[in-house]
Length: 355
Length: 167
Image (cartoon, rainbow over all chains, first blue to last red; front, side, top):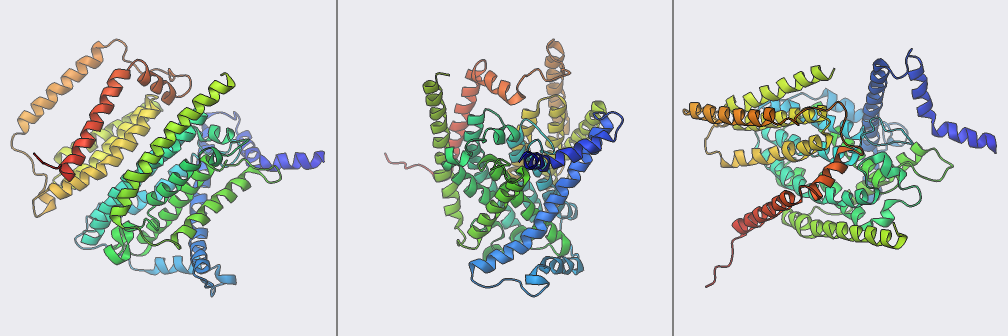
């Protein structure tokens, strides 16, 4: 029994032990060079997480699509179609890289690169396990939202740089949609911040040791899910790339791997948003002790991603005036009411507990 | 280390600001403005004002996209490459901005309390003390700004939707 407990403890802290070992290779474990090395290693791990997540999710999306519409999905390449992603990537690499003649070349080329950088920056502050945040900053949530808000600008850059009317329309839709939904997204997170009194994601996970915040903040969770889906431009909120209306929105003129970067960025952002939801509302790495914390964390992220895909293949696209109506007249007042109720709740709790 | 980072991003911000003024294409100007704002955000982090840096990214950099939209919608010229041609009265502009710079410089240098601290002066992160100050010492300016923004929002809605002019 003791050995089992010890084994569990070791498994739980496996990555921390490895990190300590690497630090121990330096003469002074806390010198600048040791910190720099650890930062580089952390960065590489985050990049690997983003790329791996994108590779897995591309296949998973098709499988979920097949499951929802009662068909097998891709099943020709490899066992049960697992090599489909590799074939897709090879196909994308083989395509000609076209830059439209009238394009604003620099903007056109830099937009997909920036959009692929953003999930790496946001995933770097997520705590993957006890003490396992690659960068532990006090303003975790705020930093996350601030960085992900830049993606609006990238969509507009892509739409503008393509010099195509459908691209520009898509870019403008992206701005209208993403700036509107940023507000309920932020406000839904505020309730949790009020309870924990901290923006730090590590502290927020620690505070969920007894009860995950989805129980205390159910309205906030629903608002967060809707606003998060809209921020990611995924169906039913995929007006930015609605193919029946604006061809493919900002992506119309992109070919080959440039388009692939947008695709990877979308899945990276989806992973980041799911990771934030799992951290803030589902308890992050907290869970029953028979599995290591990081396994719990990735299971929760997986469940969130599955729900997002399920929603995508179930609901039809929302109309643009309904979209704005939902953001400004339903979600925004609801999130403000949620903040008020949370404040009242905290006040009553303190009054009752005599704090 | 901090000095090197400071000079890299200070030069980046100023160069981007210069390009905002001189760029012929108004969309390029707006995007350079975003770059300049991001550089300033890094400078805020160097001054231990990380909350302000995040606000800078969230409010200013992201809002540049709105500015691009207005630039695109309100520009009447056929060719976007000549949408931001240089104004003839650049001397007056230089005079005004020079005077403004001198005034800000005077305020900064005459205020004895203006210095960068080695460590953050706050105990529990800058957001916490920032909010405490906002809700106690600077309560009235904060509320006035909130009222002003609400009035602006209501005004924008009325301008867009129109009112029933029944007499």
